[in-house]
Length: 139
Length: 139
Length: 139
Image (cartoon, rainbow over all chains, first blue to last red):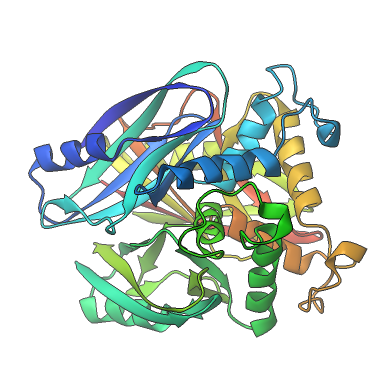
């Protein structure tokens, strides 16, 4: 079973979409299964992170912003792929450092997430984007 | 087929658990299959690494310690999520930089690991923890 | 269904092998499925990246070279695992920072990649290597 989940973004941030994934799983009626997510872009990515304190998401984003500054930052003058904007190549790098696909077991009809785990789209680009995540469920 | 593997940790380290995973696969009697591991925490993670020289694991851990210092380090004063201890937010970041899920093919009834590959739980936190990894096997 | 894809490398670079993967999927005759790739090494890795501008691949590699310098670089004197050469331990670290396995849905008989996505083997070592990637297809 497959579906496409779309997530509207407007700048660098972690967007939780655990509920959309959970709904897809629950609507399917599967009992034991494996849910795989795949993001169809190379400038945003996926992660599973703590969904209790919003500062975790803010600090994560801030860490990546400091690790991979925009290509117009003096420390990044070695970058060549700059025609799509100063946030583009850093977005590709941040995507390589995180995940393009995630697999989460389903047990007793529900995602087997830990207590504090949420599923996030990690947007690395500025501007508005409509992001597509393919969800594949195999019973 | 699913099971939960538990791994007791006591501070930052790589804990190999290849044998537990191999036993689960071999006991199942599958021939060709896919084994997926999913860690139910956001402050430890998974990796597949060389299991020959223990210095590889030590150097990996040391690299991550230097890349993401504790939040009481002067260079990390920008961190906000500090109430759970100086090792907590760095642990979330290290988890985002590594893997929450891994999929390993099973061929002829055995994990199709390369010659030097071992499966590790990468503990990023201090203190004692009992970590849970869901193993899902699909034939 | 499983196969082994082999990729010959000769130094740090991103090697696209999307076509080999696509051929395996198309030859199988599956309609809806999940394709999983697993690299049997700990000093190279996998990624999905933009395949339009070759500068993206060059900048990605350059970022990782700067983030994890060779072990004979003065900044890396703390490294202990150096007997296999100054590029070996950095290769293990780069592999931990990227992916050992990737899962890509197959829809209507084709890999559900985004428009600009290509599948790459990310070689982190110098010298010539023959790299093995296990491809597992589950319908």
